[in-house]
Amino acid sequence: MDLITLVFDSRPHYLADAPENASLLTMPFGSGTVLGHLIKTAEEAGSEDFFVLPGFTSNERYEKTLRDVGGGHVKVIDVQSWSALTETHELSDVLLVVDPACWPVAGYDIKRAMNESQNARWALHAVSIGTANQSAQEFVQCDDRGQVRRIGRYYNQVTWTQIDAIAFSLVPLASVGGVSSRSLSSLRSSLASRSALSRDWPLEGGVVDLSDEEGLLLLNEQCALQEVGSAPSNKSIRVHAPGVLVAPDVKIHPSAKIVGPVVVQAGATVGENATILGPSVLGRECRVARGALVAQSVLWEKTTVTGQYPVRQSVAFGKWNRSSAGDGRVDSHRSFDPVKRRLLRLGMDDAGAGGANAKRSIYPKLKLILDVTIAAVSLTLLAPLMAVVAIAVKLDSAGPVFFGHGREGRDGKIFQCLKFRTMCRDAHQKQRELYSANSVDGPQFKLHNDPRVTRMGAWLRATNIDELPQLINVFLGQMSLVGPRPSPFRENQICVPWRRARLSVRPGITGLWQICRDQRSEGDFHQWIAYDIMYVRHLSLGLDLRIVLATVLTLGGLWNVPHRWLVLGNQANDIDPANPAGTEAGGIQTA
Image 1 (cartoon, one colour):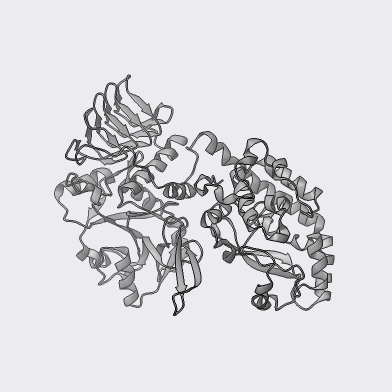
Image 2: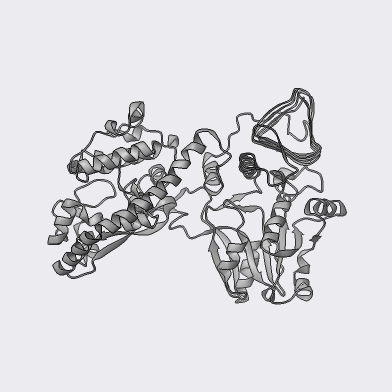
């Protein structure tokens, strides 16, 4: 069984005035091109045949450019040639169809997708669920009189089920006969109409839209950061200066100022007193003339930038002049969507970020190792006690020993949070009947004298022993010893920025809110928000150790500890737990 690769090509709107041989596949991508990266990925998965299907009229110059950047073994076909593939290849072969305009944030993992398929008779479509920015879709339900009855928020990571885009498909060649599609969505629809076996495979992290200029710039930014932050895989690439990689035959004048991350491809020239500000990528044989400025941009091959017309946060091509830059006024205040930047960094390696971000990323990895190790030791030492408690729970009332409830973990992934059962078996059904007696504010539900709690359950809750099984969740990497309280999806609907912050880390058995809250009787949802955000902002080994110590000394939070004892210095004043609404959600720094 062979793997055959077919890639759609397009000319996005930002290439409308570009040379006729310019296309998305020929655009620079770090030290290579989009096409070169896809060929390398397909070859690693075992593909030897590579076809390109352009969504526009091709010509000899375009096809030559593809052969130049693709190593000579790329063939251009039209949409009518789909069925011809079944005549030149075995029907047992598999066709990999890629649309690079929908670029997976986590990269192309073709081998894993093939393992997921597991059956050559099934077509597999790698899909992005919902929007790519992790925002909420909000719907208001009204009654006949126009009064609001319900507000629902749907998140792409959890409940939103609409397919946003398809990045690639693995299709048995036997299913391709008679199919002629110019997009993956139409291919998916065509296969479904023919009753072909297929399934959708959700992509982790979503996709970046490369048909948008900003998407291509952001992806090149992350690629430049990766390549600059690691040893060059291509031995012909050398380090010109810190954060600056150059290919062979590159000429850079000694007076030129280059601030990385910057990648300069083969044959490029940077003239006297020219300035290049990263993240930027200069394509093959580009020319940045004397005194010219290139800032946070991507230059297509053989692009010329003069000192008269700077390039700022743009995709440039040809001779960059007044006509190609509109009226010559480039928006110097243009800024990229910070949510898209966050999304990219979630799916790609931060090794090249440098500075505080690189150092900050070390502790969450160390924390996971510490959590798993401590949980394993604790489970071993506490096994006799947990066995006695399990027997007592079973003898006290009918029902299972453990209670598992779906909670949202890091990045909104659902897991079963374990506790010793402390309520009667039908407690969940009775909750709706008791909502009117809820003693706390916000989305939580709690009763001071909950009639659903068993005799053994009351003692377990008073001593916090009911939460010992969460050590199993910690051992499995679903939770941490210290972190925000694990909450179900329903409780995370009130405040979207708060949800994004608290779900950027693993939830914990104990945390700031559990031991610092001082308004339990009044309802303290506002403190819950404040302490969760404060913890995420200042996540560190020292803070975790202080929280663990405070938890032990207060017997699991039986009395509160001032947060200024735990979050030291001026950091303790960045959020007022009495007025968290005054905090700018946009300032949240996630780990």
